[in-house]
Length: 98
Image 1 (cartoon, rainbow, N blue to C red):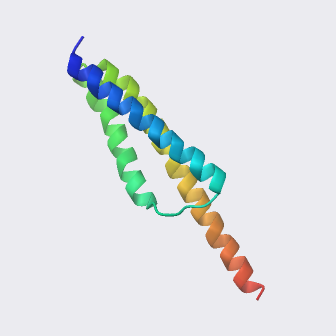
Image 2: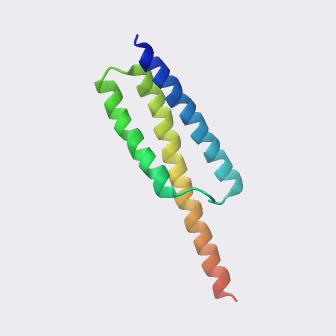
Image 3: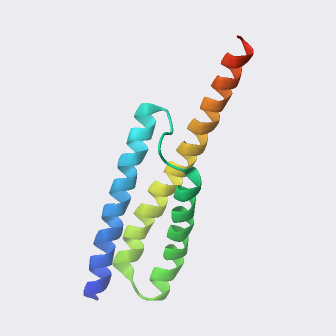
């Protein structure tokens, strides 16, 4: 077992939990404020790269935790897109009725 893999895996796992908190907050608020979906999308793409990179380099713990991060980020990207579009649609509807 590689200790650097375990440490990196712990950081990745904690990152996944932090992103999950953002998903919960976005779900509760049903709004997107203060975060750019393109930024989250970039880190999600990086996460998908890690899903390839970690096992190729024998980093099992990082790979497992990386799955958590990329899953949470993917959910968050979807939520950010959904709630941004929903708000734009609501704003367009309310402006049309004025």
